[in-house]
Image (tube, rainbow, N blue to C red):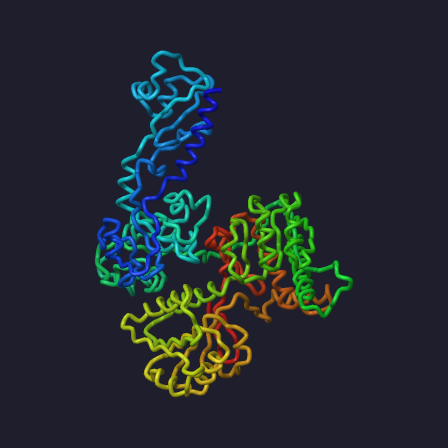
Amino acid sequence: MKNIRLIIFLLFIGISSIFAQQKKYITYKVLEGETILSIAKKLSETPYNLLKLNPDIDKDVKINDLIIIPNIDYNPLLDNENVDLSPVTIKDIVVDNYIYHEVWNKETLYSIQKKYKVSNAELNKLNPFLLNEVLKQGQVLKIPLLINETVISLKEKNTQPYLVKPKETKYSIARNFGISISYLEELNPKIKKNGLQIDDVIIVPKEKSIEKSDAAFTVHKVEKLETLYSLSNEFQISQEELLNANPLLIEGVKEGMLIKIPNRREDNNEVFVDEILEDLKLKIAMMLPFQTKRDSLNFEDRLFNITTDFYFGALLAIDSLKNQGLSVYMKVYDTENSKYVSDKLSKKSEFESFDVVIGPMFLKNVRAVSENLQFNKTLIVSPISSKDHSKINNVNLVQEVPTKEHLALEMLQYIKSNYSNQKLVIITGEVDKPNTNYNVLIKEIKALDTLQKITFIKPEKGYIKLDVFKKAIDKNRENWILLIGNDKVLVADVVNNLGVLPIENNITLFAFQKGKNFDKIDNNFLARVNFYYPTSTYLNVESQEFIYFKNKFKKTYYTYPSKYAIEGFDITYDILMRLATNTDLINQGTSQRLATKYNFIENTSGSIINQGVFIIRYEGLELKVAK
């Protein structure tokens, strides 16, 4: 009884101790009037060290800025990441750098000394009763943890702290630092279990260290006479990608340098190959707002039509998969477009047996289902909402539609990859408020033109005059007009004014989102400005796949398929085909169905999001896929 009480007491202390432990680096919110110098004095640090920890700081800090600072209470000896925990068992408790071990049946002093790598003398010193008593089952021994000084030294030398920013994922951070996701998790074990959280301080490799090739990069030793141009051609990547991976190349390519060559594999650009494993059975639930409990069905109701079209498309997908040998059991639930009903349904024990739940359609209902199935292995597919899902904490949540932020960032990446000294003109609206996504776009675009000869245009009194556009255009080279904003008047002003300029001006217009405000614009003007925009769907009505689907749909349901019927088919077919191959959606590669591209990455919260995006361009009055 005495030993049991001791174990319980130590367990309580151990839990408290674990929560009390702090990281080597923590975050600090800047107060009004504070500067880097004043913060450094408060911490007894040098301004240089603070700036080194926060390379993103531009000149000085502002109130409410979040920065990384050293934790003055940090004790490396109490950091579990610096110790060898491999011998610790389920009956062991770690407190203040010691293991408290309850002796098991048939254990001996020799086996304990060997397992925990502790000498007989040290064991007797920490447990004096061993000098007078025989070792017995149930006794609690105090054993020192082994501190690996070499690990501490290597961490100091090869790693640095990093502040997790909004929208960042394990994938994006690993890619930026040239490492695999598994290695990032090895450096930060907590993120493997809990996922990334905004404003976390994690450990990453020092940017300039190159030790070996991995899944993300190949290390190349620069040979004599090699140039940025020749390296770009040899490895079939853009000079921009090379410079992003190797900032030192801006100073010139030198013989003998070790540089990182980004591998295409980590970009998830490999093509997903459809394959159904033999004798595989999948059990799925579909949660859609049929609203069947109404007194009568209203066939003019938009939501009802969207729901039924989606469902009909999904049925054709399942029929197609069954014909290919996949066994599918499906059960359909009516959510009634109600959070309460969605919550009540998903609490049923039968939901634990489903491989995947497709639906509900709307975010509020998805959130309720996701919370109930948080600790299950069931995938929850959010089919049509493009709103940010990153605040929902469920690693099995799949957001099928890219967010507006993802669309904008994919457009940005396309611009960066194809930029070659064009004249840049950035157009923003008066009402555009600086936000994280806005700032990222502006910062990245500015970096394309190191001479900062970019022209910025904003409306005055709500409008932009034609003369302003004429002055901004360079008649001697190609002009790239980058439209950041989706205001109705702004969109009309930009396209209509640029559309009447002489075609010799060589203008290309890029939008970071194409909202409904573009629908009323004359397509002839969009064609004249060689319009580019990002979208999550693109349907080639002349493709053999769509023609077959259209005919099958018409034959089955006596009508032509709507875009929601196509979405129902694409989402259901793709997710079930992927599950028929492997449950790990992130590492499967890119697939393209009737109108949708699927390329799954990890979201900020550890969930899954599709970042399959088409970049569309106007070629005359025809729409073509640029990427």
